[in-house]
Length: 249
Image (cartoon, rainbow, N blue to C red):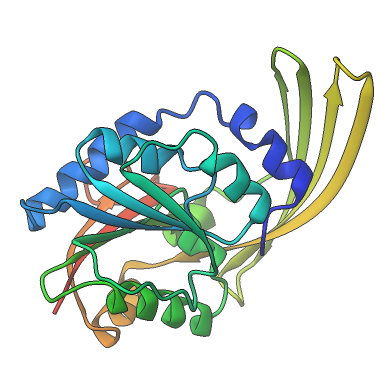
């Protein structure tokens, strides 16, 4: 799926407390455990580009690929010289070069709900890596999702000019290893005295370590680490978010 215009407009405000710099530093450290000389990154599903900019600040050249034209427009505004972006679908995007590492962050791989989607995403990653290159991605972790099932939630955020309310209504679909989330988004612009509303449905896949290993090995990767997101611990039934590092063979 691709984020709608209203969701893209609200995105950075909804996630204004997310520490993109700390996350990029964490991912960079894990990449360098496998490939210490890594200097270039392909960012699949780059969103509004905030991880990409942080990787550039760590010394990488970064190329981001984003399916949502609205998100892409936000990411290209004021991007530093070491960062470039392209409009594309990570399942079939092809650049004319390879990179030291491929990253896909903020649960982008969980937006690949079918096995075919996952295969195509991994094929894209492998096509852009030499032998020894690194793939790093995070995702929803199945044991934790099933133990602590998603529930209906409402979030309200106030910015300088915008007020946002997002209501999420999840439905667990265990036969598909997915969660369907129906969002209702309300955005009030105090400058223009307007209120807009939108509904979106996101299908999120959760994964288990053995299936991740199977996907990776079949796609030409060697799993290097399975971690709880933002730690060096193994994921467990309390880890809703997991992170995998793999090396191209």
